[in-house]
Image (tube, rainbow, N blue to C red; front, side):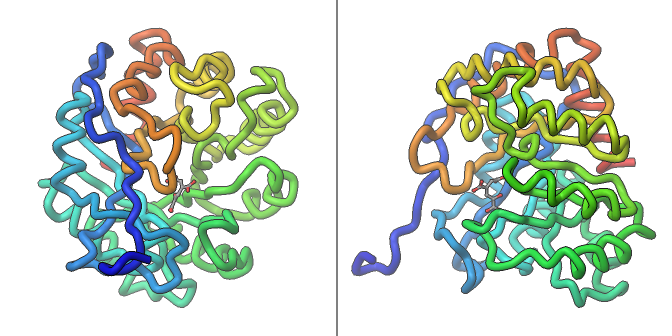
Length: 293
Ligand code: 0GY
């Protein structure tokens, strides 16, 4: 704690490089966040980390530098169930953003309809103990049933060690389910490693499950240029070309070390989606289907 209050952490690269890879027209960054600004949108008293402000102006400037035209803002755990910072980013984007909210399980239909009118198209269920206090599966399933009539989907964030216990829960969700960061499967074990194989089995068994092929910075054991990530993720994109999304994860919550250069993240795209057709599906067709139709 400093004289000015608790330390607020900067988790993003100050000068991201301009990527060499140029995304197709209409490319979507389907996983990013905004933090505050805190003066307008205070963080949750239950937040497990206190980031510096990273608001919509910064997001839009980075997006333009990286060659993307649309973004999906995913409500970060530090804002709890108060979605105003996410809604502010969407409102200021001129229809170029959609959002994924975190809601109280007691949310009612009128509140969900208001979120829909503001650009929300999904809810996120977070199972990471270091980010949230509890993750009540029964309550989450009630929420999933409430959002189904709106045509929304569910985004789920969990780590590979609880995949087995997640399977029946994921099966019970009546909507499309998008798993963040491939369920944080280990990249160091290679494309046929036990965690990646178990995750692919889940995708084979449940065709409603999509995944975000994101976060080499979080998942790689070898660091930038993240060769282990490229080796594992390319076969996933090729096997499930219509069920994958890509995103920067900017402003990279909790990345105090190994903060990625966002330009390098974009340069990973042609290594995991090696044809123009795969890139078009990953960056344009799939996210457009989920968020803009
Ligand atoms: C991510 C990953 C993380 C954090 C959050 O909501 C969040 O705070 O999602 C993380 O710390 O792994 O997807 O942004």
